[in-house]
Length: 392
Image (tube, rainbow, N blue to C red; front, top):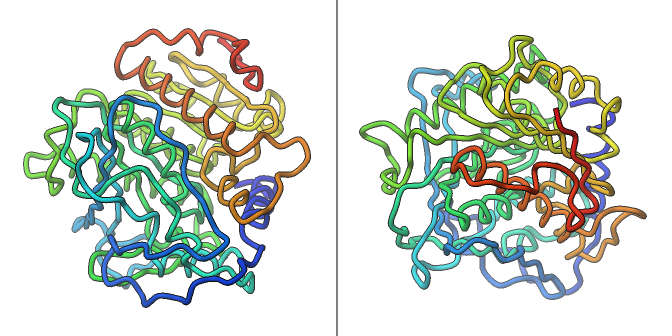
């Protein structure tokens, strides 16, 4: 992450989290499991994710995966690399119960890391209202799989809106928390592991983080598509149609994964500098979308994007959103609005930014994994005046 983008993340988090919430509800005990009940919302706080746009209801499972063949790269003493993955999937309407946004411990550590002394209770984040439902019965059929990798130091929960929308449009989505790279990750036994490299990048720097995430992603694909998958609804996945998208370092990781794993047929980098350059030989003709904030990623603004654009050898587009910030591609600005913080002058409205993100991301995967024509990706659209489109 460049110093400019790191500053942008800090600014976005500062906008989201410093406002105390009046008459907050008393703190709850630590969650006994990763699917803990959210409890009542603090007084004065209301946050609801935008309704998914697709025809399907959305289910969500939490999946704990352990890679017995790989020691954790950041805390070797912890033993095997373990991950928590939120699995979103097309579901039957009317089944299941509301899914929580994040656990109390995850929220507490996030606030402690990003907004110390803000006075915001963890419940302000645990009670964000999502649309996905736990224990929802799956819809019939087989669907493409999309992996999502969050930005560095950002929990996977902040990408719930994107994951829910893709699932509603007919995708299985694996939203990955990369352990020790986010303020806190809660596991099924109730243990919440804190960040180990948030304050100081590891040996090898951010390129090492992107390369480690690529290994995480390939491992997740291995487990989800194996004959003995630990996920109960693995039969929903069409193994021939797999894509990956990521935000910030997660977007870089999408390209690194594609370079190493031919099972990933299409990728997206959302506003992330390429810490690991795209191979000069390209990605074997596979499609890749560059999707960023205009102030960060317009031609000439990020040399790593200019180099990637030259190296990409398949279908490609470079989209930039006027008024977007680094956090626009996540739930972050929406949470900022919920605690009463105004957007910076000239910034795109949170719901509008999320709508654009979800529309273009869904259209890209519809085109590349489902073969559905998407004219929106062929050039500027009067319906999306904020989006600039660069064609090959």
